[in-house]
Length: 306
Image (cartoon, rainbow, N blue to C red; front, side, top):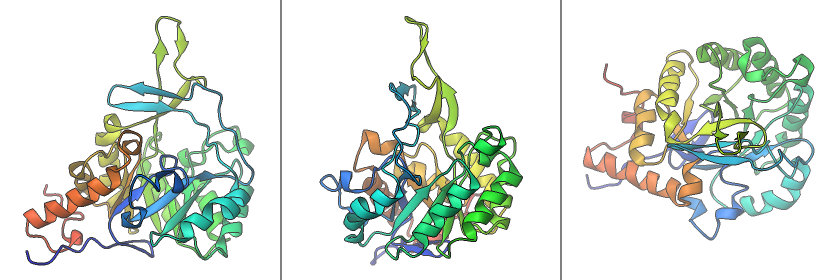
């Protein structure tokens, strides 16, 4: 192949130079990685989840290493939407890489207000909605585990913004395709999955949980087969683009998700181990296409041979 393969991909109205994005909560606000990698080579940066007001998150310890992964219960610590727009966004504006803002709330009203606040900010390419948060008005059940609740929160956000809307799905459900269809029906432009799987680890010497929150979100290579399976199921159930997340450490891992039907991937836990992971995965995907004499990444998306 004389020319380099085309890695461009479209995620619900946002054109990316390549299918590799950074997962919310694992890449800070982008500037933290500025001295480590060329941020202009990433497909898109998704900043850590933002709420209406600043949040200190959960007490420590908040992270525990596990076999082939990690547990975290950071508690969505963040600077709040106003501080982000004033203090963090100016740096991101200088990049050619699209910025997506991940949002979360404890009520539908909070989600809607966040979307409205972001809607007229031209330097934000899109919104990722984290629906794995507890709905305090419904007994603390997460929005993302109930199809009706998922529909209501996504619909409320859709009503307040014209920006491309990505909805991040929780795997802690009986049937993820039901939630996916609800989000699509409510106006989502794309879906990202999976968020972390609820887990727990115990220090046998002290008899105490290894993280103060007792339970946390399991991420890393241990969850990748679950994530690939869920992506494959959701791709067959909706018409909008799907973005794969879950334990992607190498280009080979990312290609699994694309072959299963994802149009892009998000790199999460790998960023803690190797800050250059997103670029190395991009380069590895390109090398794979060249080796296979494939001219466009679109040719392998959904190419699973059953």
